[in-house]
Length: 444
Image (tube, rainbow, N blue to C red; front, side):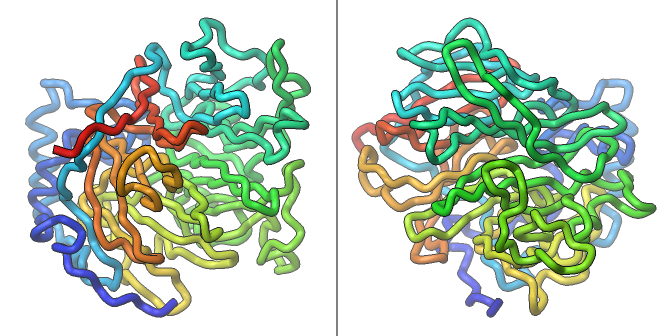
């Protein structure tokens, strides 16, 4: 991919790059290798999907660890590659929040039904129905058993393109045990009595240990194929086949760190780019991902994705069949303990990001706005942020981000979607999570 001309940071709404020391000062969670292996203390997530703070007995130890980190060499600066870097941006104007539902336990994904009601997943393993302006008190029955562990559980949800006639619902979820788990895809038929005939129609070919990086967003394309993201499996020291598990993102023989493209029965789509290549998994559509958390289709048919970096280096990408997005060999991220993860931030044959967020905002849900409820927002891309508790509004010129601002939500944003009424809806990631609606207000 030809390197794009570098944009000035002013064009993205921030005056100057933020120093590494400032970035570290903003991390509320103190890090050790053992905590990271358990999925704790990371900017975007912790073991329970909530923010954690060090207990007082460990405070001096955490300060010592942080001091050692800051003394380590950090490798290349994040602004050395061709991708534009985004940091602080101004607040968006002309909007307010309305609370529609409370008492959702770590909601993860939402799908709107033709009648205007919505299905909402809760990470602990429940599917909820929001209809007639309220949350139904009882969960929908018929889901398979779910492993709710760390970042894993019941994740995204998508409706079959022909849902109006077949009532098929798809969910991504985690199966197994804390020591041997995998991301999977289930399908069932929605009825008033719950999901019927639910079955696992795809699962990661390999199990892993630990509580991190399962993915998993779902997106149906116009040809009725289904995209599914699977994370790289976790941070060091989590291992697979004798090496860091994240290295599997470059291995076509595993599903870790990939975007998959499936038929509606969970089988590989027949024209996938690596079908027939010896040793390659036929479901793979793209590779080289850390942990894709948002997938969106624009009006021109392009697929956009956002994904978590490590310390800095969150990415916004346009996905192309057969493309390699570099992780972990080409990246803008640093290790949580200091040095650069990769020696390169760009390489021939590797897709450069459209945008890099440093410091990490921990991106989540992603949607293109195509309605007319908000003046000037049509055609903008909206990307959630777990760590910064906000939504980023991205103004595009083709495939280039030309402006960016933020909607400060004040809670961890897990998903943002456009509803059938043209409004934007938000799920907040908390044990008492909420369904919010963004309403327009006069621009002051």
